[in-house]
Amino acid sequence: MTGGPRALLRRHPLAADALSAVALVLVDAVLVLLSPQDLRLGPLPVAVGWSVLCAAPVALRRVAPWPAVAAAVATLALPALLGPAPTTQSLTFVVLTYTMAAHRPVRAAAAATVVLWLPVAAVNVLTPADDAALGVGPAYLVLNNLLTAVVAYAVGRAVHARRTSTEALRERARSAEQNQRSLAEQAVADERRRIARELHDVVAHHVSVMGVLATGARRVLRRDPDAADEAIATIEDTSRATLREMRRLLDVLRTDAEPAADLAPQPGLAGIEALVEQVREAGLPVTLLTEGTPGALEEGVALTVYRIVQEALTNTLKHAGDATAVVRLTFGAAFLAVEVTDTGRGPGPAPDRIGHGVVGMRERVGLYGGTLRTGARPGGGYRVYARIPVERFGAVPA
Image (cartoon, rainbow, N blue to C red; front, side):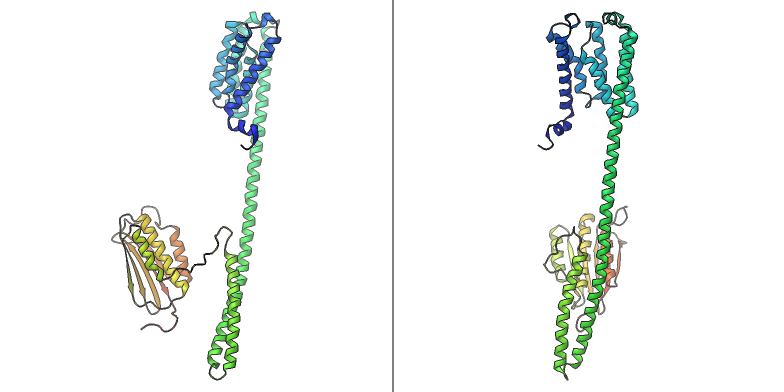
């Protein structure tokens, strides 16, 4: 258990208020023992019983405030039946007035105060015999009760105002802390972008140097092998430095929330067949068609094609319903095209069925100078089509 008894009572208001009612009964029992015999309601057990009845509304003051007010007003019939009322009756009225003022809006608190104390004033005026027995007149009792009500109400509203002010200060502190955290994160992101730009320039310089050295080494390879060997050694050292800078660049771009990079190879064209098989096992019939001869592609282009197929098939599984899909890969001399179509029910009335996935696909395709088209098919279903210009390694297939 955390927080101690105070936190426990705060979590269980009914138990806390029941303890408050018991405390009022104990106070009244002590006063009964100390009071003259002629002012008692009867034997001690009888007096304690009436005291418990008058203190019961205190136990409900927070879980059922208005029923508690009604029950307290109902106890005003005791003076007409028994003569002097228990002390807990007056204390209960004070506690309920404070509670309503401290926990309720101003109109509800004022209404509860009137409902509680107006009947009290009426009882003071209509029972002059009891007032004479106490040696005071009705006017004195009315003014005394009015003053008690005003004090209890004022204290409750002061507590309410302090609680509201404290909560506002806490909310303001939370907002300030959140803004400070956002500014700090923004500053970190800006600095990372600046470092990434600088590292990009360094990497680009190293790659340019390697390209120039490789060209020179190829040209002098036959007539000056030593110079070619020296250029190749420089390319080797430069490539290692470039790899180190690339690792630093990735570390800068990776946010703290991202998991550590997986050391497994990134998927490419070879992984599309396995991806299609996984989707088939998930319940979507998929056909994979290939046109042309696949050649050696840049790893980034192959990864882009894989991600487009993965995103399109995933969204077909989610949204197309009872449908089939076709994945078509077309390899041309200077371009690569990927098309994913399905026979599902097509996009609903909400814009863009695929949602944020389209943005990701468009960014990937645009990075390599390609184009992306998505939308509903005329005969029903959905179509994702991407065309990417490619530069193959080695000779272009005939």
